[in-house]
Length: 270
Length: 224
Image (cartoon, rainbow over all chains, first blue to last red; front, side, top):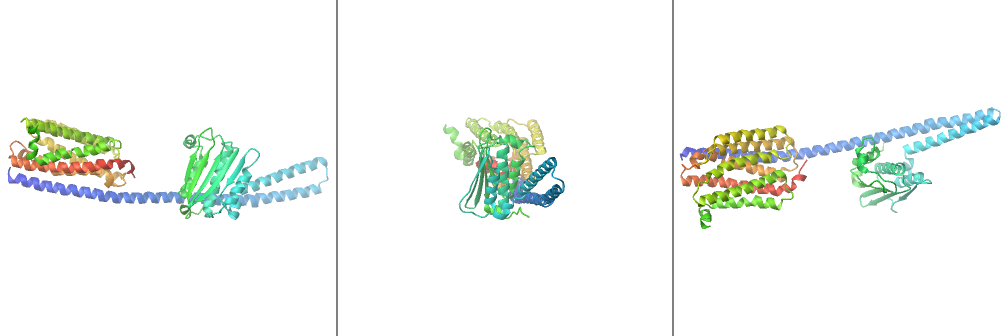
C-alpha cells in the first residue's frame, strides 16, 4: 500500500467523521429547540382557543342578559300596560255577560304570557345565582324542575366553599343542561345533582334513572349532541374534565371535575 | 472446534465485534413486545450479521474463501437499510420514500454490475456506504422538517441513524480504497489494521443501535 492511500483514508475518514458528528450534534440541538418552540406554540394555540371560548361564552351571557332585560322591561311592561288598559276598557264597557267573559279570557291570556315572559327571562339570566350563589341557584333549578313526574334532588356539603363567579355560572349552566337532558331525552323520574368540593377540586355530578343514550352515536352525529359539546367547550376554558358514564337502557352518571386554581383567571361574567 | 476458535486469539477485535452483535439482538428480544416493525427489521439484520460472521469463520477455519459472503451481504445490508428507513412511520413525505426506492434500485443495479466473487467487491461496499450516508442524512433532514418528535434523545431511530451515519462515514474511505487495503493484494498487517478499524466502527454502531432499540419502547409517547 502506498503512503498516499493511507493518508487519503485517514484524512477522508477524519473529514467524514467530523461532518457526521457535526450533523448528529446539530440535529439533536436543533430538534430540541424546535420541539420546545412547537410545544410553546401549541400551548399558545390552546390558550388562544380557551380565550376565544371564554369570549364566546361571555358574549353569550351578555346577549342573554340583554334579551332578558328587553323581555322583562319591554314586553313585560307592555303586557302590564295592556292589562291595565284592558281593565279600564272593561270598566267603561257595560257589563254584558258575553263581553265580560271575553275580557276575563283575554286577561288570563295576558297573565299567562306575563308569567312565561318572567320564566324565560329568569331562565336566561339566573338572578338567584348572581344574588345568592350557586347552591341557591341549584336549589331553585331543582325546585323548578321537580313536578309530578320528575323529582330532582340536590346534595351538597355542609360547608359552603365560595367559588369564583365565573365558575358558579359555568357549573350552573352545565347542571341546567344536564338536568334538561335528563328530563327531555332520558325521561328520568329521579335526578340527583351532587356538588362536592375536595381540596382544590370541585366535582359536580348529575345522576339520573332515565333511559340513557349511546354517547358515541350522539357525538358522531353532527346535528345532535350540541349540549354535550357545549359542556366540553365550557370546561375546556377552565381545563376541566367531564366523564360520561352512560349507556342505552340504563341511568346516566355524568361527572364534572374542575381544579379551582385553573378556574380562577377566566371571567365569564361581564 | 479449536480450529474454529483459535483465530479469535489473533483477532480479538473481531471476537468482540461478533460478540457485541448479540447486544442489540438481546435488547431487542427483551423489548420484543413493544418494538415496532422497522426495529424488528433491524433485529433481523443483526441476526443475519451474526450468522454471516459465524459462516465466514467456519469457511475460514477450513481455509475456504469467505469473501463472497461479505459481498453478498452488502446487497442484504442495502436491502434492509432501504426497508428500515422506508417503513419508518414518523416520516410522511412521499419524496423521502421515492429517494429510498430510487436509491436502492440504482445501488442494486450498480452493485450487480460490479459484483466480484473471489475478492472484495469494492464498488458494492462503497455504494452501500454512499447510499447509507445519503439516506441517513435525508432521514435527519425529514425529522427536522416534519417536527413530529418530542425529544429526539429518546427517539430510537436517532441513535440507530447516528450509529449508521458514523459507521458509514468511518468506513467509507476504507472500502473506497479497499483494493489497496483489504484485497488479497494488501499486506496482512495493513489488512488487519483497516479491518480492525472497520470493526471498531461496527462495534460503535452496535452500541448506538442497542441504545436506540432500548429507547424504542418510548417511541409511541414521543410524538408532538
